[in-house]
Amino acid sequence: MQRIVRLPDGERVVYEGVVIPDAWVVRTREANGHREVSFANAVEWTESEEKPKWLLEDYQENWPGTNLSLIEEKFEKERLERQERAREKSAQRAKTRCRWIIKAQGLNELLTITYRENQEDRELCKKHFKEWVRRMKVALGGDFIYCASFEKQERGAMHVHVACHKLPAHGVRKGEKIKAWKLGTEIWRSIVGADNGLCFVGGKTKNGGYRRNLSLAKLAAYVSKYILKDFHDAPKESNRYSRSNGLTPPDSVAQTYYGLSFGEMMDAVFTCADGDVIVSHRISENVFKERRYWLVTEPQLIYTGGGDYAYAA
Image (cartoon, rainbow, N blue to C red; front, side, top):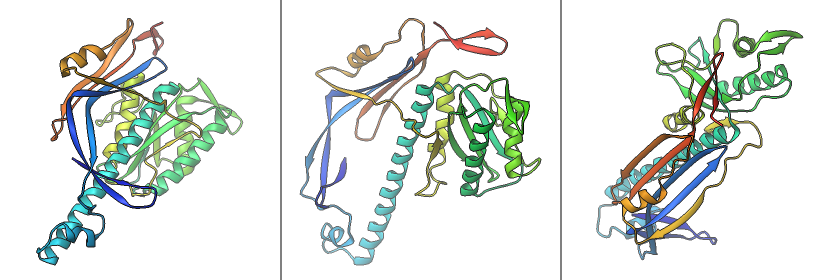
């Protein structure tokens, strides 16, 4: 495997990576009772004599005697592939940040905002959503913390997945009390036009039904997954998700272990405390024989009556 590193003076250097079979990097992230732990083979990087294939002139030197048009075609293909990988990695980082902001802040209410019309303009959707957030803050007395992702439906219309704190029973709209479950829709329609959209509290399934209660970890995964799903459609410079000002995810802690097999590493990192539940765990291996393990746990969710859920003490 290779990676190109840009030095402080602007020079780009190629590094070759070799997977170390019995060395592992463990990364742990925790907040608000939620925990994610993963490990993967450590990789040893050494500087290569190969020139970076960043400029066409440098690329040509790696392929002496080859027809120029073929070199240009191959160069452009690899450039686009690198660009696509970079965009996907950027979307993956944004997905992780979004997921952890939701878990760390305890944003346990799911809202889905839709258009009735086939409104396909992403930037217009973001403009509408920004105004919706502003008006929601006013209606809820300034207390509206959120993290949201944008998705284009199969028909082309944009819609928004929002995680926020559980809405109160009522908000205030134009000086009058209004039930909170109606509030989002009324404000959205005041922006996009009467009968031109809805705000579903609890979200909706693909078949149009109401989505059942999700645990916080599953809600966070649900909202954040659209960032990665949608990265092909999102413009390169576009913000991949929206959040309240000042919200940041917790940092991860990394440790390196040596001399252990994959199975021994699983025994070492697998931890599920009393009262916690396993949300997800999986094993994968890439083309470089780099093996990975990922475990997600969260506190157990229990029904408290009246349609409400809470985490076990």
